[in-house]
Length: 462
Image (spheres, rainbow, N blue to C red):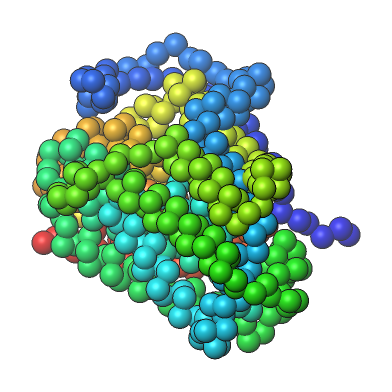
């Protein structure tokens, strides 16, 4: 009997599209009345509307519409791929990785806590999530070359930033938007979220380091042993010399990433008196395009070689761009079938007449499936918090706890859900099947879930 093999990310996402489309034939269509420029739903105004069941044609078109909606992210991914293609052509990455491993002298595992803390700080402060896509093709080869497997590199980026986003402190795209709709300040609940950040980050680092030690000592215990072949060739062989020109290329390479991080941090919204650039994917795409050209010129590749390397690098990430577009199609189908508000209304009904602890825990549980269906944290906050926060007042639950429950559920789901473009894109970059990631991370998800339940229950009592 032929052994079952997990379908590719494309198949999984298309199956989810079909499932969501089928649900529009079963779940009643409905809508809330909207108010304000943000068109936020008004609690108590839900009404059923004419059904809009989504058929086979809608399933096919949804992935295209999703790609149109995610064109800025997909183009950013292609520009990152092109940029890295030029850098790889110079040999600077290979030389730099080899030099780092030599300097660490067997202590490469120290990279895990350092990098995960940095990513978590980005996640908790400005919601660093889609931006991490640029780091996967950079760090996965580093950890593979150090004797680990691609899962370690993926986990460092995904769980580092994921723990930060889950315990967002001043993240304006999740905590900020949700706090505004809940009628509380960004500082309300900050102490609780800071404690959560430290604890969750420590647990995630311990979890990744334990796995990393295991697979380095016994490679056959790797969860992707026999699956991921993409980076095998990077083990062993001659390491390029770190010449002066390669050092210049690495300097420009590092500068591009530093500019990216600085440019997306909304300093004005988090109260830091530093000029805010406010860049997003179009500007960041231009940054990586220019960065690739500058590195090609500085290294002396020539016009033809630079162009060829850039196009080849972008081509390597076309699949990731497609995954991002397909995943957005799920939201397109839900909105087209007008079932998003119905799902939210069911949650509103389930919360009526409950006590503070039960109410808050139910809010958290309701946000978990909502986060799967609506992966955008800002979109989910806009849709749901204006409805759930007023209900919390009747149960004696403050708006800051609604915000914490919302962002905790959204952050938890985004670490594992196949509807998250970052998850599927990161796994594609590491050539890791989705089921391998689930097998790796499910225990940590359970730990995060139980810790969050404990935090919320204690907070509701106090």
